[in-house]
Image (cartoon, rainbow, N blue to C red):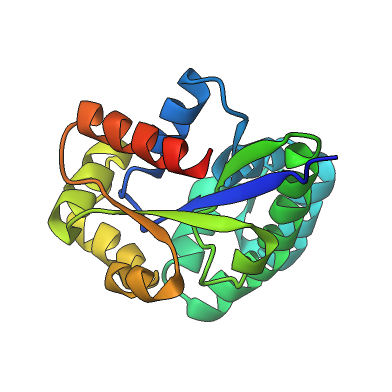
Length: 191
């Protein structure tokens, strides 16, 4: 029996991970997202109860308020570490279960190296984009102030470090059509 291969897709906030994932899905590949799993967990009572215990000051009408939790963790590194320690293992457990059974699958994993999950995958595809383009994209997409975006970016792995980690690096500095062409080149090389 042929062994299955799992590839992580990573990169800093605003680097184009979701666009790359959409391209994979459009081309029929099983592609999963930690962000989507996180969103699903936010609808599960047992997960919310754990968050409420961690951040009781962020509970509104019996449920953790997502915006209040975000404001708290991005202004307090200990709170961010507490959230990451709670959320990431649950997200990764579900992600790996969803990837089972496919000969080739992909997963968008935003904090892959920061959380030490790279060894769970057979390879890593890293998207890289200039800091300015990433910041503008995130500010536009999420309606955030530029200083908040830059603060979040500063907590992530420096994109220049990706070259030394054995990743397949995709420079996402062009159009969506350019990214699709590069995605097809990478897929061709993997197959």
